[in-house]
Image (tube, rainbow over all chains, first blue to last red; front, side, top):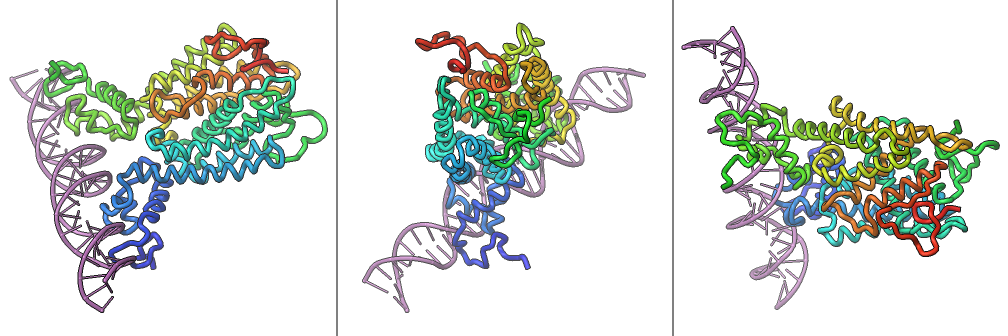
Length: 237
Length: 237
DNA sequence: AGCTCATGTGAACGGCTTTTACATGAGCCG
DNA sequence: CGGCTCATGTAAAAGCCGTTCACATGAGCT
């Protein structure tokens, strides 16, 4: 039977008991289905089984709910990136690329968070705590870039780590925004977004003087079959 | 005196005479001010001095208006990129970078178009003519990449031009989306988006084996005290 | 002049956001 | 237990928006 309140809350009396959480959850569902624009405050209330005015006891307005979601998104994002970076294990370059992939994975698997964070049209800088969360996430990329910069081949000037971080961020974000989501804004690609990004990062790192003689799409540590060295895009011509 | 119809149309009778155009113009204004989400069909009608039902004679619904704007945006975008590319003059790499800058310039100077094209949440692939316009714009980047690929240093495997084009696109799009707009979604940067992107592209090209012995942000012109020329921030090995 | 059809109007429906006055009942204090 | 208080939820209403429909207007053609 399914006449329960649809959000897992059992029968309830006048008070919901966990409305704020239920609303956030409902909003996530709705945003992932219809995008942040299609999401409706009233819908979320309905889904939680309360009147349309109830949400206002927990969020100043619709934007604040979306901002809350973006906030959580950045927190999960930070945690995911931290995990992917894994303090640079087993080696810096491998970990670095894992971070890029994590970025894409997040965009694909958490489209609702991703939308709220990057496509909701919220003035990011208006909300200090949101801004801070966003910066903590970026700090992971920056820390990784820092380590990578320190590894730059001797005899070359060190690229500014901050700049590297911004470059990596923009690549990841560009790929994720243009090609990364499951079903929206899809453009046909001759390869997976992951492979596209991996090749991009490898070429970039090579431009910085790193030796990147691994091939994309292979597990870390694999060596190309003996013989020619291939580029990050696969077979040489 | 300002009781004229606000969109430059002089007094008019029952018929507007140029409503479709006036609506598109009004929508552009509104979108650039309040984003594609804040834009309102009724507002556009008001601004054009007609009743809220009038727009329906020209657009099936609100989405179709936005799609029309995106369409025009892609056309202008294509034209701008074509101009920037200038068939590869004076040399391929220079022209290539000019294309990247044009991308940023477009995002900054035509935020309304840019929003409609990339952030409106429209299903790009639902509208064939929109899709086609988008692909014509991308074709410019692809053509440029093709020429660049042909120039790749001998002795290195040639990267697929399509992939290079996608890489450049994602870099440009990433930088533009994250840092490129005048006042929205601003994050603090230690450098201009243009310089950031230029350095990124130069490093990338060097990763492909190109010699890029110019420096970014040439306007600055200053040299590090003992610096040798080459590379986006200094000298390669 | 008269016809026709594209274009604009006014009114209406339903839905959304937000506010306000009121209802409920959970938690606390004696 | 009895009663108080305040966070939390409700109902109703105002104002806006998108969209539709029957109807008005007049531009352009014959």
